[in-house]
Image 1 (spheres, rainbow over the protein chains, first blue to last red):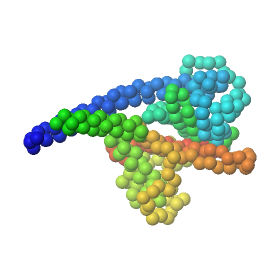
Image 2: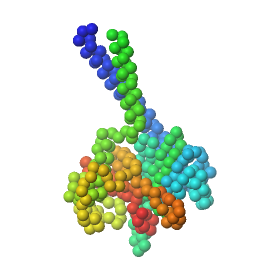
Image 3: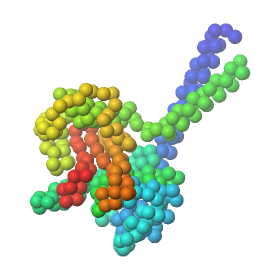
Length: 152
Length: 158
């Protein structure tokens, strides 16, 4: 084998490796964008139906068996989540959320909802504050949830 | 020759697969997102964590927009405000003081979450999880806008 042939082989290898790497990255990117859109839709529907309108009977439809809740008011399993939210009655289901998040960030397995809420402080002065929800999706189900709520 | 070709193709396939797995394993920050994330983490480490206010202009825009209603608007007024509470800078460290448990960067937005386990004030036998959030928008390589979860219902501090 001549030196020229060795170089040609190396070049072919590099081209092949580069092409494969690019193809994989492109395929993954496309797949990832579609997956993220699905995750976002899942989280918004779950939030609307189970949290906002309190239909805890739908918990199993959306939430994984090994779901974990991380909140000041309830930390624990799906059963703990249902027991806590089930204290309040379900509201008539609506196609829209009662309040829209000011931002939705979807990245990898995570969906973040950012809320702006108006309230009055102890002196009666109106002000706005932000609440946050972070949700991790795994295998098409809600696997974990964190929020910024204060202890009731 | 054929053996070399086979080895080349196998190597190429392995390289492709490794790239795929490494991309899938992380959050796939674009180079721009990685820069934004680093800027915000450095700002929180140096300026807000170790109180090196002299470095604020390296990280923050002068017209920094504040959504926390107890904190002032603008970089310099904010530095003066925090400087009253924490006047003494501490030696800079490579690690953050309160490292977030989760960082998510999407485009120009960097979100940091810190989860702490604390005693439940209503039942000291029990532990509860409390999450704190900080969110920063980056513009032209500087932190431009800030939201956090310090203030809640009725103006209560978290």
